[in-house]
Image 1 (cartoon, rainbow, N blue to C red):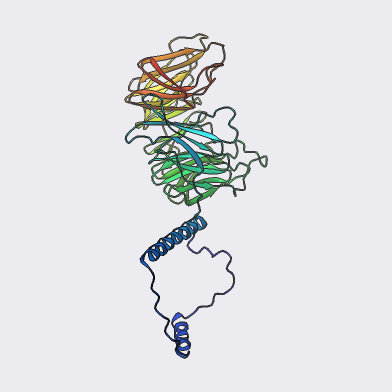
Image 2 (cartoon, rainbow, N blue to C red; image 1 turned 120 degrees about the horizontal axis):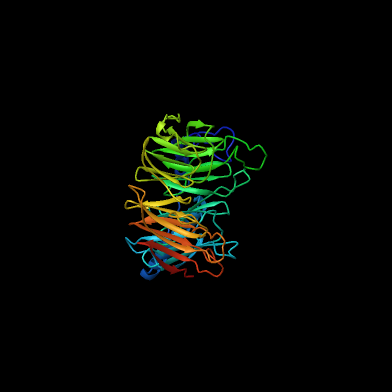
Length: 438
């Protein structure tokens, strides 16, 4: 937490208070007692010389000001090299880090057109990232580096705007991860806890230290994790030894439930005044105080699963069953032939994926994406590509939905050996494919 009474570094002991008026008076008395000097002869300087002197003076001032800025600024200069052009005004861009093989000490981040996959710009950071998903927010991208820095990039140009270092973090895992932007703040997790930074300049607002220690020193286990989950309506939710809620403005702990443990990336969502937790069963907590809410309608939802919230509706998938929930009521429930995972939603369309067909049982392993009617759960259309080698293909690195279409990025060799990576746009049972451009 920041304090107003922070001591000045390098200053110890008592400070002497100097009366400036008295010092100036003494100086005036000394000057008045000196023998008067003869006036200096007037010097005539030509106009060109005066102009040159003025320019030199301006240059010196500029250099000194720039040096002072670099000396006293807490953030260093540009940390990336950028090629390409700016993202046009009002254009929709897709930001990804493909994680190209062989890139051990750098990360190439791309801004792609959502219309045709063309590259607007490529920014190269001198470190790999801890995530591949980069979400634009208020004209910025937040890229957590394995070098211990959280980088803020301009979504328009790709230039580094500022960075924040957690290298002094004493925990074993010093790399930042899972940035979430909300309001004027970006939140992220690192080895010693949760951080909150000002979006504009990257200044630290608050830091919550991990309140627990793993059973095995130096090894983070299920008894003491460090996972920032979500930020909603002025509260920050995350896991340490159970689920915590913090005040987003100052990091003050609001409540803690040790019974709700971390179960995976999509194990909790917040919608309105309720928090939904997918553990061994679906639990509902009041966000105000963290107390569990009695929800008889959910008594049959007694299996672990994954959650997605979109437009005030919570989708809970458990094996082959998908349930749509609003507040404490079930809107609809469907059973399918195979298990599925909810991915994203837009324009009353819910997108899910599975590695087998939803309509029938069988061994047709592959990638299957389904568009469901978000109001009923009925299938609108699907797109599939069966695995040519019988192995489970890699899931796309980044998935989003807009205007009833599903956008995703699949890395090189992600689906099969020698398969090209690139942007996929799924709509109306079709796939538009735009290969990666280096």
